[in-house]
Length: 320
Image (cartoon, rainbow, N blue to C red; front, side, top):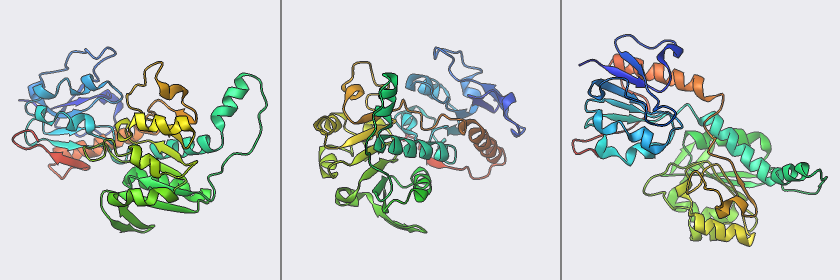
């Protein structure tokens, strides 16, 4: 058996790949039906295609019977954890920590500033040749709550710092202290919401976080607050969010939605005070060079039998 690596980036475009492995290109193809580049049983490392539909990403899993490393190019791994029973036992699942922090944090700030300063309204007025001035909220002097203080959450705070916000509160799975201060446990989130002018979601999608932002969560947000979601769509209860924004009590800026892609005619498209971007937190010019560096480092570690980076879990004998 050979040790194949399935890459969604042509291997000749990645400088520094270690010797000792056979590199094969597979990204599913334009229609998701691209033939496999080799025998799936020979695949030791599967790098999951980026920005492909869920069925494409998971299509090879059950046939990769000897895979040792499943490497995503996303920060979230919910597509893979939903199919753990299809992944060979003993395989390590790793995410792309270090690849998306800058780009996603930039978008979180972009959505926040655009929503607060009324940019969507300016664009609509420009399309109609109308000059519509007026006062809009500033990010300065606002209280910001970051729900999900991992690498992306910390990168968001890095970019908040020059904007003279009044305070940043941080939420993660468990309590800890950082150089910037206290990180509250997720159990504190409801008590912190009433003080937040801006709530930024950058939390991973898990069984525990699915539907976290429900009617109770939203009801505890202060009047006029802004919800920014750069996490995953199902973290937010869409029906509950619609109820609040249609009342005009809060506003929202969403890079991710549930369902996704958001279908034509969905009420979120026309909901007042809602700004939507089509899940573009990661795909930017920052992605490819960082993704290549991650792959070179990770595959070098794999060849040298060194500890891998960003290990989320190792599948057990029963596929969990």
